[in-house]
Image (cartoon, rainbow, N blue to C red; front, side, top):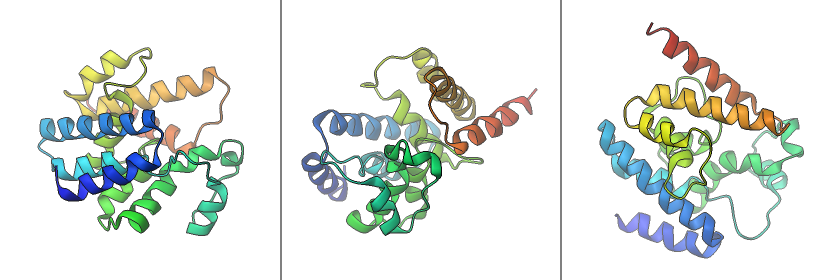
Length: 194
């Protein structure tokens, strides 16, 4: 692990709730494992994993005000659930507080909860690592997803976006349009193989 990542983790340990910090460690190492499996730069994956939830601070923050300060557009549906903004805000914090300039890492942080169309390798790695890390509370399909993530990233992204949509629908939650977009895009990618 690089000194940079060690310094980031030391900072985060003081800012995140213990369970969020442990989740961060799990995501970081899962992202590294996926990077190794697919021949991707593990250092980038580790850095993205370390910072993916850097805006989910233990202290209460006003996500709406923070996003406005940072120039992030706040969709109407986020006013009912401001924590949905943590990924967009996390990319800003990664740049402002941790001096990350690599746009690939910042983009992966920005889309790690919703996904997006035509995700980069790092986008997919972080998106999946967040959902399959070892400490993640078991949910229907997690074991299949963990297995699939190491065999077919695109299919795993499709499965996870489908899981998220089903979960949100079952609970009557508002869905970020990017999650639906991710599902539709990767459904088409998988269907194009047939």
